[in-house]
Structure formats: C-alpha cells, structure tokens
Length: 266
Image (cartoon, rainbow, N blue to C red):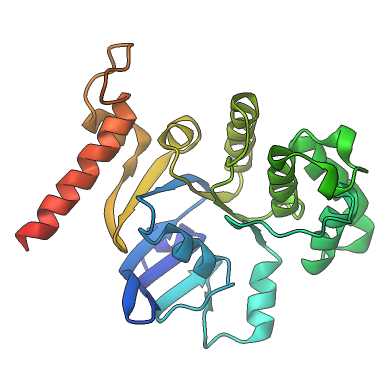
C-alpha cells in the first residue's frame, strides 16, 4: 500500500456504477485525504453517483471503495456500514426533511440516527445550528423557513456529528451571496481536520474554498489538480473578467476540451 493510500480517508479503485446499460462511472480511481476537495463536471457527468456511493446510500456495480480503511459496498455487512456511517456527514442534492419538526428536533433526530452519545446531542445540535447561522431560528418549524434556510438546516444535520468525512452535493443551492461566503469559510474550517468533498457546478465556490479539484466528464476523470493549476489553464487574471469568464472558469473549459480531444484521439 502506498503512503498516499495509507493517509487517505477515501480510496476508490476501478469504481463502476451502471444505470441500466449505461456506465455512469467507468472504472474510476480516486483518493481523498483530509482537506477540502472540489468535484466538478457537467450535468450528468457522474458527480452525484460518486457522492451517493461514498455516502453508502448506493452500491457500486463494480470496483472497490474503502472509507477509513474499511471496504464498503454490496459485500460489506450492515455492522461495517453502520460503523462507517457514524463517521460520515452527507447532504444530498435533494434534501428531504420532516416539515413539522423544529430545526432543533430535526437535527437532533439525525444525530440519533448517527448513534451519537445522547448526552452530547443537545450541545452538538446547538453548535451545528449556530455554525450555519440559524441559532435564532433553532425552535422554528422547518416548514416555516425559506429555501436557503432549509438548505442551511441540511448542512447543520450533515455536520452535527463532527464527521471525519463530509459529503456535500450542491450545498450552496438556494444560498444568497453572503451566505455562500460564510459557507465557504465554514468548510475551510472543517477541512482543516476532516475530509470534505463538495460536488457543485459553481466553479467560483471551488476556487474560493477548495484546495484541489477533480473534474468528471461522462463518468471518467478528466482532470485532477490544485485550484491554482486549474486557474493557470485559463490564463493570467488581468483583474477584469472578459466575455469568456474568469480564469478558473476558462481553466475548467480548457481542461474539459483537452480531455474530450484526448478521448477523440483514442
């Protein structure tokens, strides 16, 4: 085992996910260590499928997935998956909730599902809710909140157990610009001790919060590198965005086009 793999929270080898006859992920190899990692790609590229497999809510069609050194997947038992899930935080793209619950009740319910120590739950709930800026709405019913507030409740339930692996699928959907700035600061803080994977189509969120980027195109890895390296692909930043967008957006487009050209030559 390499030193990189030994240090990784997530190790994926030849991961394949099929929906009917279509390979949504095609023999993907990835490693993620502590830090904040951006997951980019066009709609339908396979980002959500990857996040769902890592969250143990979907089984891979083939390959190997290890979280914290334990293999998860169709062959792993319930006890093994439960142990892994206690160390996970997950915000799906479509976030379901109980509208009649208060924010406090819902986040506490998720903490119970994660088998947290009952004595630690009240303080953990208050801290998670405060970190997403909803301390003043903690006893409001979720159904009375705006869409952006509900999304912040989703982030709170994902971080209530102080997870070692945090998986966020389009986390800033519905957040206003100020809230997105606060969210980026929060995940940078979380990434100092945990592995955070952010799947998004908002390149600027990745540029502001992530240390590195994985670009997925049609189920394959199209690019991996630091945010600075991706930005460099877009040319120098002159301080004013041109008609082709800012440097990291141009870098994203350049990386996609280079990958597509390489595929076409095969």
